[in-house]
Length: 351
Image (cartoon, rainbow, N blue to C red; front, side):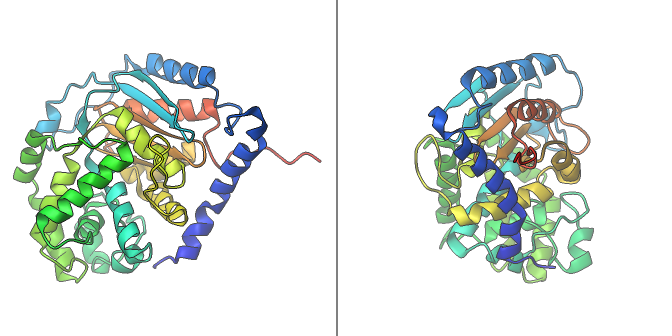
């Protein structure tokens, strides 16, 4: 089943309306933000979550990509950026890890910008597959038609849709776009991660050829796979990721730089895909617990978006069995609860 733009807009209309109402109701305080989003409250929530989970020993680094197994598992940083551009941090928010699958969100955004939001459901679908993120069975089941941009088959296909006459043109376009989301012009690939992934991505190559065989990838499937592998290897910090997430929270405008990177009307579709498929097999559990569209990466990063309020990110490499940062999930859940981040949480109207 392919969902129309109207359906996706309806999915998040309520969320955005709640966030907008909160901002409007509190605009008299001067900041235009929810009354819970004061500097003191934010700093206290971040510090508590950091302290509560700093000593947590659960999870382990991803080891199916050798370079990721070597990353310091003690890296732990939290960053939150409000839609008015204020940045709050605690812990190690400067160490960079590979962005991995979080990159899928922003390549998806690039394709939306270039080809429109309907290009994605028409070319590979936007459904949760019910299978693991690198499933071949999910491709064969529907001939590649019922995927989404956040599983590997859909993500490689999405990368293949970025316009450009050469490998370099496509790659530079993707990297520069990530940099605009992060508010940095110097993002770069972590080369040992890229080499490690390129040496072990035979399954992704097979996935790309299947998507090519079924007509979803129109160009060279190996070029698409290599660019995808490279985009997953870009180094980012918790602060970078929080700025990127806050751009989605701010209707496609980077709140730190002021640059518009997405049409506001396209953001609900991006958030909808994040909500349904952002945390691999545990996307439903995550949405049930937090109400927040999110995306994880096996490098240890996790982002979440509270529309109209803030973007938040945690970097902590130890993962659970589903491939999501253990500390990241716990910290963001607690912080969002403390700050009223869940867009589905409302109070009854009082007459």
